[in-house]
Image 1: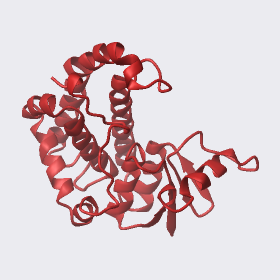
Image 2 (image 1 turned 180 degrees about the vertical axis):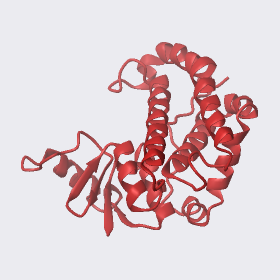
Image 3 (image 1 turned 90 degrees about the vertical axis):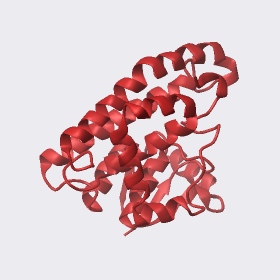
Image 4 (image 1 turned 135 degrees about the vertical axis):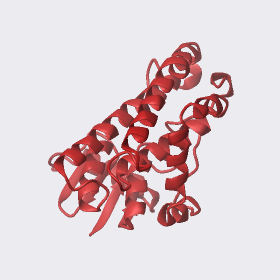
Length: 236
């Protein structure tokens, strides 16, 4: 099956979590919005009056007649179909639960630089962003990262669930990479207390398909318009 991924062009965003899963699976897919007229096609689909079960917003994935929205929902689907999830029901639910927690973390990172409204620029809410990001760095990030480090240590295989890589591991890799971009100074300190996360990041980045993807033009760079944003004044 050839998948079609719909997400905004020019940024990694939440679509990157899906791309990593597709790349690791070796799946054939179109990154529609990065093609000619791709963004227009995306918007036409979102506005189509005849569309049933229309997604609220990107990312969404077309797989045959299925249209699946929401990052975690897409990954739950791909995990079973592409061998990126445990075979047991308990294992699949555990991976799904971890992915939902990762989604919570990603939302908090986004709200660090946009605490008032996504419709305002960062410059319009810099004072509020400074307060929100300080709480993120001092309280929330240590809590999340220590949790995932503990899950990795308790599992004992180097992966979050079972003895094989799952989509949750790919997503946690993306989180570590994104936080390193957004908060390089703070992450230097936090990583000393979260060594299992560093090991996971390195193991994922060394996987042949992921390494090839990261070295290719398909991997968009982190940028000041994505979820993970670097503002020097917020990193301490």
